[in-house]
Image (cartoon, rainbow, N blue to C red; front, side, top):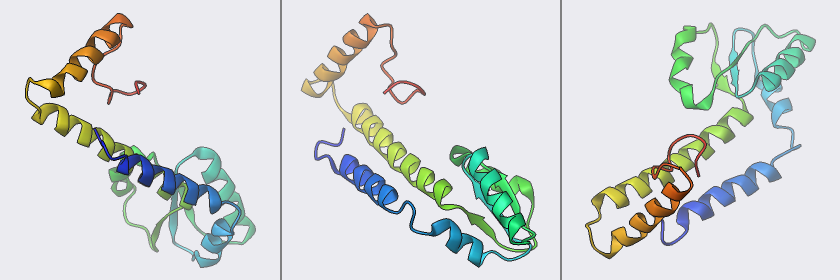
Length: 146
C-alpha cells in the first residue's frame, strides 16, 4: 500500500494533464507529421476509423490499426512498416495510466507478500473476512475487482 498517496497523486496529475490537453490540436499535429508509409496505432476502433478517414481526406497512404494497450507487444505481429510506427495520443494516455495502475498493484503485492504475520496482516485478515462475506476474492488485482 502506498501510505503516502504518491501513486494516487501521480495518477491524478496525469488525468488532469490528459483532460487539459483535449482540443489542443494533437490530432491535427499528428496528421501534419504523418508521411506515406507510416502506421498509427489507436486504442479504440472509433479513434482508428476517425483517424483513417482524416488520412484519406488528406490523401495520405497510412495504415491505421487498433491495438489494446495491454497487448502492446502485438505491435510486432504487424511486421515492419515502410515508414514509422506511431501511437496516437489516446493510446499513449491509456498506456501510461495502465502502467501507473500496474505499479500500484505491484507495490501492494510486494508489501503484502513481504510482511510478517504481525500487525501488518491484521488489516489483510479483516479485509479477507469482509470480502469473503461478499463472495469476492482477496486478490483485488483481478479484473473487475477494485
